[in-house]
Length: 429
Image 1 (cartoon, one colour):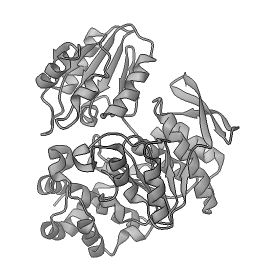
Image 2 (tube, rainbow, N blue to C red):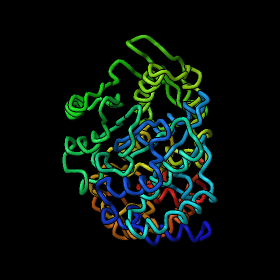
Image 3 (cartoon, rainbow, N blue to C red):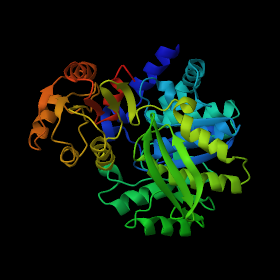
């Protein structure tokens, strides 16, 4: 098989969550363990950091990887889903895995795939482990795919674990309450491995404390770290970082402009502290450079990403209630004349909870991603009507954005989102 044939093979042979939803989810670690054993357990050949959470785990993973890169460590990064190209999922020092490697890996493991029948995510996870092992990375930042306890990534024995925000998402798989969801995420906590909880959420704090106690794992909350936001300036977010009420960093510049990134920063600063305690050599400048240049260093896309200035055009992959709440808050803090929203969703989300949050003083263009799980744009428009959200229907996401751009004037604002898969289809990305 060549590269295109290899990618087609895993797309067609293996169930993909983003195509068919929960039917593709294979809870448990057995398949991943079998695949890793067949390859000589590549996951044991590098140091790793494991990152779980509902919102913020992707940005956190990218910034941590950027920080390690800046400090001179050869750094792997495994995230999901990809937006444009499959190889975005697996990177070393910001560079995507080569097509040559992916092709060779699929050819090498095709007989095992036929025998074990893993999910798409399981084989992708093991592919990342193998690539990092072959390339002799020093460290790898591994983002959980879904949940934590039963996620394919959870066979690693990391040096540090981080759990970011916990919100309602994938309730059909993870549970109906925040404590239930938190318990699944807490499944990444390992014996004697430090765990950082990035965001203080009192209603689930005890879940993490209990799990850490059971595993004899030192738990670190971030109550000693605070952020003084100084707003946006010249396309960057500026803030001070305090540790124990003393200013540790002044006028920090971050290339990620989303308000919600401030919640992630606390966990990242705590990770910086702990990694140095573990013996790494990561100075303040490495951290500051990673915060400022993370998009260039790791090629992170889709987090409050500005696509154009006149009119201001922004996309964001936030897609659950908590993520949309943060996005709407930032929209409301933005100066504009008229608001245009290009929005599409997938079927299994709690649409009413999300639609109830969206601004009513906007012209909506309802669209849909080109995947099986897509919520039809006309049905989305019908649901939105109940919440006073009105506009028009254009099924193709790029055509929808083109129409918004045609209607908007220079002092207007266009937002594109509602689903990772809508953002992924935008050509300007």
